[in-house]
Length: 307
Image (cartoon, rainbow, N blue to C red; front, side):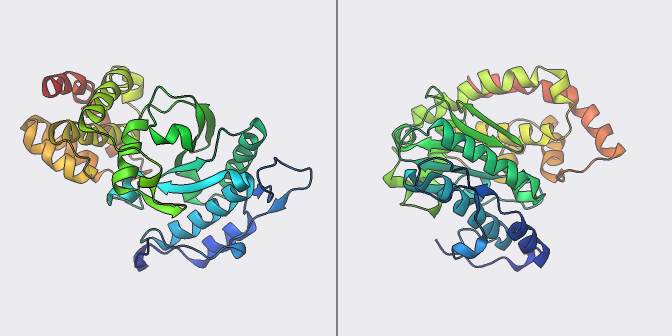
């Protein structure tokens, strides 16, 4: 997939210099595990692909891809983008890079350790995209019909690297099948089964009940200012999908929710849409405190829409 470059999103040359100076220490073999001698993978080894309209994102994705390939070797099948980069509502100021790397089979403990070391090294660069990664490493067998009940897989989110199940697996599978961007590898439709409407709706209802309800019932979690807009917009998208049977961008889903679920929610949703990434101020703190009770009421409002 080739895209025109969004000139306004291009970072300065310092980004390239930092990435080349801190490329991540990985094995450049063919899936045989880490050797005692480690080598650097740099941007010089592979031409920079252009899977997105954002040049700084593409530079970072090339770095990530080359490091993943160096660690996994012949175990690597493809790297795919989901989330906002696939759906078209990516916001450089607040969005993450959602990805799935597909592997031939289950990874050995040694390769998992290599991936963890690589992500730790990328985080240490200080480059913002290294700190806004949300991705999983999934074998092709699991990926074919990936669900929340499948075996645990390596998962990175920010500076956290774990081996865990993925509660949003069905939603991610649907987004990547329908809209996914291939950074490397075959078309995702060759690797995935489509998600039918009943499966998608069941998965979304489970996410609301099992994933979101406990969080929104927790006052301490609700008061985290950065969590509030994410929760509001994600639930707007969930409600939109339950109603329409398709996944829309968060802004589209949020505008629909403003019309569909009542005027008393309009200001809250508007605030979530306008909320800037990583902004802290007394004004923001006052507004998040004022919205606490309304946000904690979301589960009950969801119940009335879903049932």
